[in-house]
Length: 117
Figure (cartoon, rainbow, N blue to C red):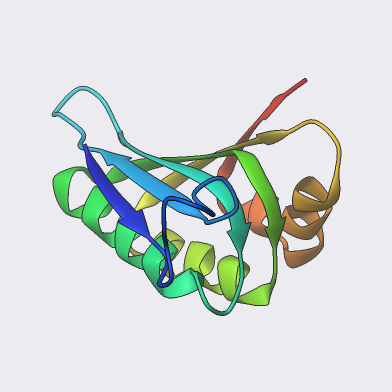
């Protein structure tokens, strides 16, 4: 598993920083990116790198966004970019701002979406 962390990480603010853990895929299983924290203009490049790394191991990528606390248009752009190159499955909360952003952007029409309660 590879971890992508945003710049400025330190032990003191570890819980506040975004994290992107990549679990490589296999021939039978999609690669997974577990995202946590805020995905914004500062951290979106790390998110996009994690998605690209996952896509390099498998044509299918699952992005678990249940621990994402905030995302902006940079995060949505990273997901659209990944969806151009791979089959994407998003795991998102059943309700909340992340789910609303995904639907407004139309990513729910381009990707497979699984909601959790």
